[in-house]
Structure formats: structure tokens, C-alpha cells
Amino acid sequence: MNTHRKPEELRSYRWFGPDTMRGFSHRSRMQQLGYRREDFTGKPVIGIINTWSEINPCHAHLRERADAVKRGVWAAGGFPVEIPAFSITETYMKPSPMLYRNLLAMDTEEALRSLPIDGAVLMGGCDKTTPGLLMGAISMNLPALFLPAGPMLRGNWNGQPLGSGTDIWKFWTERCAGGVSDEDWNAIESGIARSPGFCMTMGTAATMTALTEALGMTLPGASSIPAADSNHVRMAIDSGRRIVQMAWEGLLPRAILTEAAFRNSITVDMAIGGSTNAIIHLVALARRCGIELPLAVFDEIARRTPVLANIRPNGEFLMEDFYYAGGLRALMAEIGDLLALDCVTVNGETMGHNLEGARVVKPEVIRPRTAPLAENGGTAILYGTLAPDGAVIKTVAASPHLYRHSGRAVVFRDYKDLEARIGGDDLHVDANSVLVLQNAGPLGGPGMPEWGMLPIPKKLLASGVRDMVRISDARMSGTSYGTCVLHVSPESYVGGPLALVRDGDPITLDIPNRRLDLEVAAEEMARRRADWRPPAPPDRRGYLALYRERVTQAHLGCDFDFLSQEQAGAPADPAIW
Ligand code: FES
Image (cartoon, rainbow, N blue to C red; front, side, top):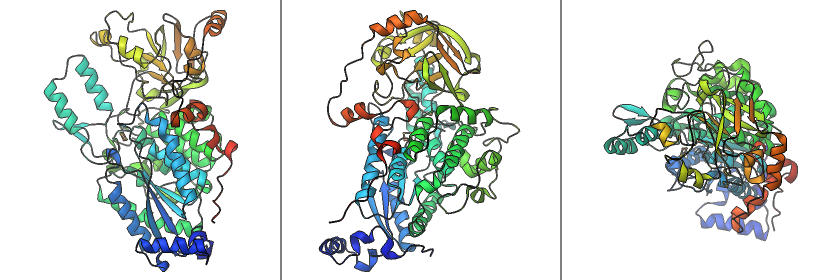
């Protein structure tokens, strides 16, 4: 056992060690739970922060996995305690689960801060759970490692593999165009999600868990293991063993999460063609570490990183195939020359050491450098008169014929307006139009719902149109596709230029030159700005009122301003009395 610290130097010793009335109380209550004093005193107490919930199907297996983590913790001489955390389920939480990422971050930080914890295993995977858990753990800065829930198995319908999200969008579009029967639609519903685990396309969940591994915060190879695979159980046990050692060593998240680690993570994001949501989350995570990640860094790294993962929605295969092809370690080994290999990871080794021996065994799934899916990065950052603080587009999911496009705006003032009019025969729209959605940003949504893949107007679907330029301050599901400009900042709700767009305005998208411009004269824009009035905030109570008051814009990560490192400083350990 690697014991750099003495037992009395453990944080939990402050609760359990002293011969005081409080120490007595803390020990006696552990004995109430059936433990002896020697079970927990002077041993690393490991908090297993578990986002299991019966209404979170992506995490259905995490109760069992927590037991596996406990086996590892006991075996390594630690004392495990499972702590439930707010479970953000992407499927069911309305209006947008993104609203609650910061709540989970606070829940995690405060649980770790207020309880006698020496180290934490963070269990999550469904989209916002990964950044939420990490943000809290970074702020608390106790030894911590992340245990990814793992992707579900491939979906299946009529012998065809089905991908979460991506194939729903695809078959729904065909159904709207009259091409899918009721019987087939019902069979797809039964076959698309058939095991525990998160979405098995390269959506936000698979992206964020991969980026967490690239940051060095999981055991090597952990993020690619399907949830239902027995290797996942062994990885959970190993995570339990390892966190006990980390608690003795005092290996802290902020020693791992350096600027170089974030650059590694962005490089991997580009090579996997990751979800655009990752940009917001990485910016927020970095700011918790006191590191600024301007959007321009993503663009710079994208320009030199090839897309190698041939996974839907960008490619052909699914996460189960990615695992069999060698998984993330194999992909990272393929781009090893683009990575800082001396970054330290949670197993105490460098990233370079962890990648030794990794190799791609199915080059059709993880492409070689000589035959990438795309020559450079999956994402571009756009600036221009319509997005002074930036906007994001997933180029690898966009149609090449729309990379340069000018068209007239068709404006929807909010999502309700979009739903009411998008299917109408009287909508003045053609295939060259640019669809614009307002009031769907961090405050406007609120919570930046994933409305950014605006549906193609029904009357154009019938004539065979399947993609158009779409612009909003919303996000888009990582499983979505299309020429969708997202995260326009500042958002329309706070009076960004997006709020001033009117029907018929010419808009130019120029991805090669990274521009997004509203071609309206400055004098006219000034007139419109003078007429613009901010909407009245509808939420005056509870968490939503706090969210509206303190959330930052998309280019700053949508964190609460009072939780970012520079404003808040580090949380203090509580006094014990
Ligand atoms: Fe949980 Fe997609 S719904 S990851």
C-alpha cells in the first residue's frame, strides 16, 4: 500500500479521531450502522457519489456498480460510503436538463465538503451528470476519480443496428414524410434502447465520458466499456481500489487538470467528432480550475486534428463497435503526436504510459491517420455580426453544400412559435431560407434546451429537402445532425444581435472563413436596438430564480458566476464543533 499520509492526516480523522464529545458522537453513530471503530477510524473514507435513480435508465446499473466499487474499497483497506446525488436524466427532465448541471455540481461540492470524506468515486454518464459531478469535485479538490456509466448495447430493429437519438431523428423525419408505418415505428421504439447505459452514439454522454478519460480523470480505457459488459464490473472494482491509494497519496483533481490536460481533451473531442455540448462543459470545468479556455482554442485545435471515430451521428458505427475496435486508448494512441503525453492521470501514471500497447483492431471503426473521416476537426467556431461572442457548428454533421450559404431569414420568436408554424403550408420558406430560432439560450430557454436542430418545414420535407441552415442560441443533442449553428452568444434574451433579426433579413454562413453575418445596415440595427425591450423574467422563485440571476453566457460555460474559481476562491473545510 502506498501510504504517503499518516492515518491522522486523513481529513475524516477530524471527525472520527479526536477524544471529544463530537468525536464520540461521530463514532457512536457509525457503530449504530453496525461498524466497529477500527473499520473506519484512520482509514480513507471513500464517498461513492451515485447518480442512480429509477427514472434515469442510463444509470439503471449504478446501484450494482456501487457495490462493485465498495468491494474494491474494502479490499484496498478503505471505508466506502455511498452517497446519493441529484440524478439528471436527459430523457425526462424538462424544460432542459442543462438547467440542473450546476445544481448537481453544488450538490457534489457540498456533499464532499460537509461530510467526512477523504476521496470520491463519481458515478455518472448521462449527459450533464459527468460535468456536474466533475465541477463539484474540482471545486472541493479532494482526491477523486470518475466512473463512467458506459454506453448501452447497440439498438436493434429488423437486424439493423439502431443508434440512440440519431436514428430517432432519422426515422421521425421519414415518418413525417410518410415513409414509416405504425408497425415499424412501434418496433423501433422497442428495439432502440435495450440495455442499461447511456446513449451509444457519439452524443454528449459518450463525448463527455471520453473527454473525462482524456483529461486523466478515469482509469485508462474506462470510458469505452459498455455498461452491460463484465469488464465494466471489474473496472468499478479497480476504481474502488485505486481511490483508496489516491486518498493516501493526496493526488488532487487540480494536479491532474492542467491546461495541457484540457488541450488533450479538446484534441480528443475533435478526433471523436464530439458533441458541441462538450465545448460549454469544458469551458466551465476549466474555469473551475482557474483556466481560461477561449472558444478560439477549440477552433485552433480543430484545424489540426483529424476526425477518426466513424461513429454515428457523424459516421456509421456505434459505441459498442468503438470498444471492440480498441476504444478510446486506441484512438488516442493514433493521435499520440498531437497530445501532451506527460500529463498525470488518476492512476498516478502519465497519459503516455497509459497508452502504451493500445492499438486499433478495426480500422473501419477507428480510422487510421491516412484515411480519416474528415481531415480536420469536427467543430468550428464562428464569429461575425450575428455572433460577436461566438457561435458553434458541428461541421462533421453539416452538409458540405451548405458550408458557404446566403439566404433570407425565417424567424421564430421562441420554441412555441416554432412548433405552431413550422408544419404550416402558409410558411414563407424555401430550401435556401435560413431558419432562425430566438429565445432558446441560457436565459431564454431557460437552460439552453436542445432545440438547435430545428425541424425542416413539412412542406419542404415533401419535396425532398433534408437539410437547411438553422441558427439559434440553443444547444443541440450530440446525437443530432444537420447544418445547425448553435450557442449564438450573446443570446437573444439579453439583446444579442440574434434578438434583432427579422423575416427576410439576409444572413451569410461561411464556415471556411469562420463567419456568421447578419447583412443588415448598422443604422437599421441601431434603430431596432433602440426599439428592443428585454422580456420580463417569468421565474421569480426557487432554483430557477437563482439560475436566471447568476448563470453566465454560453461562451463562458453557463456556470454560476459565484462558483467560478476566480470569483469564489476555494471552498473552506467546515469547522467541527
Ligand atoms: Fe442518458 Fe442519452 S439519455 S445519455
